[in-house]
Length: 153
Image (cartoon, rainbow, N blue to C red):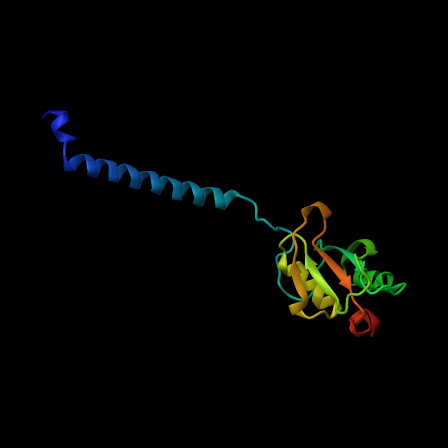
């Protein structure tokens, strides 16, 4: 049998199609193997309940957006007693923030949700603003409504 005749016409289409399918199958298998050995993106915070558990690493910073003295320090003490790692207290860019809110800094909605819930901030007041240069999971911007939050009741 002449090899040129075998690969002529329709047969070459079948051979190319089979080669492409084998290539895709190899990619799918390689991807599955890679995912099974790759570490999870967020290995520290896995549970989705309201509590900060032993070993959780939820680092937050507090930003005073209301201008009242001592508010951030009181909130820091409350969060630390609840198991959060408050790494910084600072002022927000302005002191006219009406409602306190939580900023998710790394795309970790569970940590942001736990932070908001611990303080009594509504779930609708969580926003995503990724900034990996801050080395924190969430920022809490303290607004003029701080007296309604858990640390002040």
